Image (cartoon, rainbow, N blue to C red; front, side):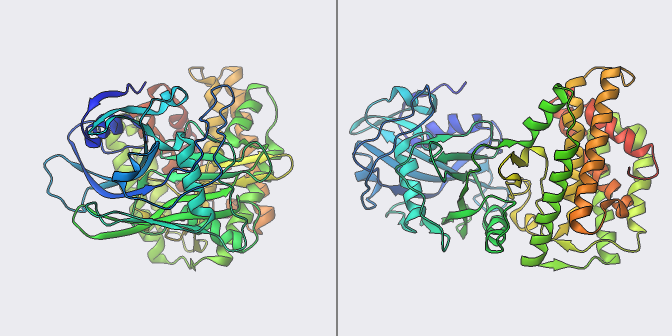
Length: 507
């Protein structure tokens, strides 16, 4: 639980205590120095809105706004809204861009505590004008209204004198109706690297606004890719409505530009694929038909991406580079997870097979981090894929590079395995329940690949050696992750490594 800080005299003190406790803060829990990278004030709308109602999670929002004012003036109002952009550096490191991470931390400052926002309270700040109560702004309806209005009106706000030069600019995509800042909203829970807010969940045409907590200079794939698919009319991804882009200053003094937020349609009445799949496992129900439909949806998205974004042919140099990368990852995994040592030689042979392949599918823009939790299912819409940001800790430039579509396929195959085996942890492989889970996962794999092949016109199983290597690479990464963070789960990917290395081809 995040305990609020009392009696702080500057915002840096509050942030130094609060930031390390956030799941999206990856700079560590100690030995970190914070530096301002930008500071932009948004004006609270009037009249004062109600705040989150605990029983419903809904936020009644206000009906009008005012122009941007200086931070000094804003903080003296009923509520001040300040978007802080913060760079985190290892303590003692000279100010430079190397090794620094920039975080987006919007905060609201209130002269009176708000009981309904107690869960979002960072702490109390002593100022010459009295105590100010500082809140994590995505939970505050005033911020939600101001941020939504920024996108709806395609307006911008600038930093003030005395702060690092920075700005934010909302962009509403051409042809899209503006999101209504006056509708109820709620924050989604459970996200690791971003914060998402549903605006208008109480009625028609709800919008999901995602705030990127970790900022990198450049174009974020979660804006670029859905935007390209929306222009192509593809309905297998949530339609992009708009975004917020901004400028800030890096620790070394160089300017940076990038995306701070994305707004897309919220697929009402949907459930994430992980929940649907694990529910089927628990209830002993088949998931094969939905797996086939998910395979077809994945192939349709890949085809659309290949039409509207750059592609590149695979060459012998491409395959050699991939094999080198897979070998590096294998060596890293073997060092990090001793339980993998018995598989070293067999895994090396799988990697070497990639180096000697004569051909491979073209490279294209892909999802980059596809699994059941990145897919939504509804009876009305079928499957849609979301969260095209890729792996958040990878450099942004790498996440936008063309890759093998098979990498997405491999990620989903691994996800079926996790969904099947999460409910039989600790059981022997010959336990009837474990055998049933393995059968369930195998049916999902085959159905997904068959559905993908029917839509794509090319069966991923034609590239069995490549698919096997990519699935093995994913499983090796999972072994390291589980060893470090969830030792009780490590048997799931270890079982997969053994299965993948015990056969000569992918089923």
